[in-house]
Amino acid sequence: MLTSDDSAIFAYTRSTEKEKLAVICSFVPYKVKYNLPTDFVNKNQVLLSNYSHSNSKASNVIYLRPYEGVVIKRE
Image 1: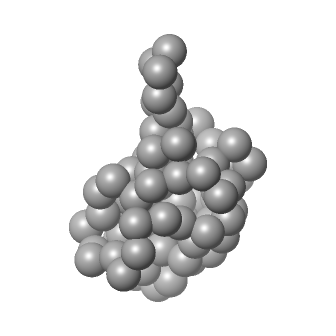
Image 2: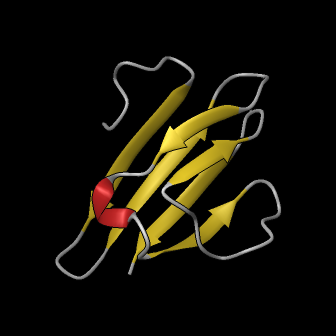
């Protein structure tokens, strides 16, 4: 688990020998800020979200909209 100190966000990673994913979910009715893990910064791809995204890459800081969930793959 990546965010034990923030009750608004539930985030964790899943890994295999070949790839690593970050699952980041907001459980609050307002926008929240989240800093991506350092190994995802500048080398990632947004695979899935319950909101439409304008780009397929996430910056080092993302702002989750109310109840947004994203799955990000490290490249």
